Length: 123
Image (cartoon, rainbow, N blue to C red; front, side):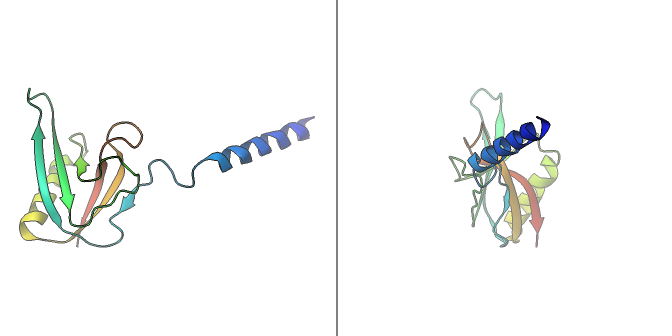
């Protein structure tokens, strides 16, 4: 009886694994291994001053998670190194320094919104 139960569990697991998409919902990805430059940094504050966000545009944009709006990359204000990352992006823009960046997930739920910036690497 136990062997039959284990076989059923294995079959159910295999079917579940085959039903999943080949990539994760949050596929995270580097800027295609290529270094790129910061094209634009945009700071947005809501009309009632209750919220704000930093958006970044790179010469080479990536969207491994297929976010709905990939025209900008979102730097979350709750990023543990927000100030450092923001400073690095501004310095890279000002000096035209090449960087790599990693996005991981989208703003909003699932693939809604913009790609979220996770890491930046200076060349």
